[in-house]
Amino acid sequence: MPDNIAFFFSLDLPEDELSMGVYIFQMVTLTPTADDSADKMSIGCVTQVGNAGATKTYQWEGAADMDFSTNGAVSFNDINSDQKIDNAEITKNENESFYALEESTLSFKNMIQNCEALLPIEKQSSSSEIFTSYNALLQARIYTSKDDTDPVNLSETEFEITLDAPVYEAEEWDENDETWFEEIENEFFI
Image (tube, rainbow, N blue to C red; front, side, top):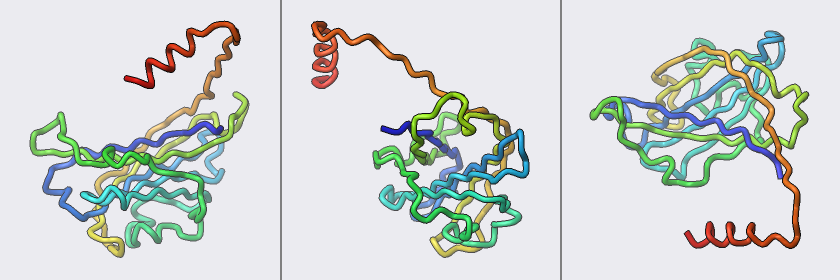
């Protein structure tokens, strides 16, 4: 069973900006800090306000720039289409209630739109190249429709992030110990 890297996007905006039917596009582009010339990996998530079933995830790999000045005048389906991975294994969070608008804690006039993309990766050793530091570009845009080629650019934020290797802990198995069964039974009936 693979591990997942979860890309959780949460956009806090005035309620007027989040009208029913608009598409909220959120994306992060990761470039290894040790090699700026390396291919970038970009993960995107699109949610249609009021229609959680329309949520889609995207993945790109390649050298092309993903910033708004380069890709702002295209629909979200056409962003660097030559570097988009068409049959990517990336998936969305399947809990549709996750995509419902939430009230903001910043302002009573704001709402929050969440989106989550899950990138499955096979179990890796701690020396795997994926576990490194990245320069990240986080973006958010609003599209009025799927075909909108003039979206509103909400933000572009640059930061550095490090993906650390997971720590797997093995426990000894005692076939005569039935306490694990009680834990599962209790969790099942909660």
